[in-house]
Length: 322
Ligand code: NAP
Image (cartoon, rainbow, N blue to C red; front, top):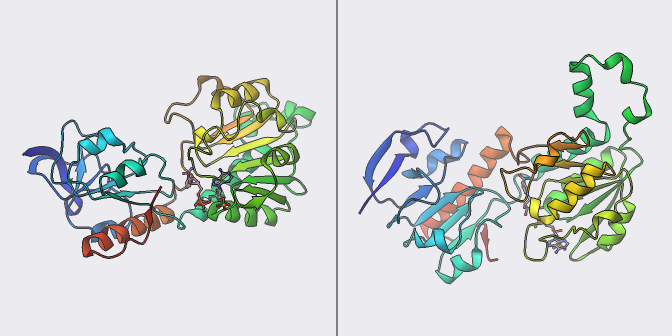
């Protein structure tokens, strides 16, 4: 059976999705996009799918390279010969791992190489919110510098001497802690295996930052009942996953002006709640926490290492099991 796919790895540019369309026989490795970095060119004959999910079944594809797209039973039905899903990212909540396992499909991710980049964006959002960087930029641009600088409402808060509450204290959470300590913050944390109870952390911290994976247990972990535990004037940073917070409840809190937030992730990306768009107490970024040249190349290296191990029949360095 023939299917419409775009040019393979060695034939395309790095922007992906723009390759010349060919009618080709079914292929072994398919990708939802290309991935940047030298390791990409080590992969044999990768074909970039025109759309996700594919419009029709694509027999013959044994390896799928993907980022942030849904891979569940419906999508798996369209790739009947699949044996590996290589997820570009450490978070793999977009992949139904149980459904993959039930079909004998392995799943890998790219942990460890993006910790610094995510920690840096976390600090950037923290600084932006606490020091009012985005509204201050607007004041300069709209010519209101003279009249605003000394108003109490225009004063931010020091990171130094404030308390940071980390929800999740794994690879990324610990990198955030190191950087926050360098800024003079006191760090407290909550994790499955220790730390402060979540409610106590929420009541205590000036800044709360989320670094747990999205799982059935963490879905809605920060609920409508818990958001009021945050101190007046506290800041919530989310570079983990949008659905970890009750987004409607968070928007209500932000509209009230009681707290501020720096958000890189949303419950239904790329949809961002309309009510957030004009708020001065919110800084919004489009899921870019790992988006640096260096980190994306390192993620491609890990992705490729898993695929190459699979092709050689070796143990997968970063297999996930659920
Ligand atoms: P990790 O090393 O596995 O750390 C996860 C932490 O979450 C661990 O401390 C774990 O507790 C804790 N945790 C898990 N379930 C919990 C629960 N129910 N209650 C409390 N704590 C819980 O993961 P990571 O590499 O730091 O990555 C964390 C997440 O960041 C990823 O899963 C991904 O969703 C997100 N992320 C986002 C971006 C982005 O672009 N915005 C980029 C990279 C990662 P224990 O230590 O006790 O096991």
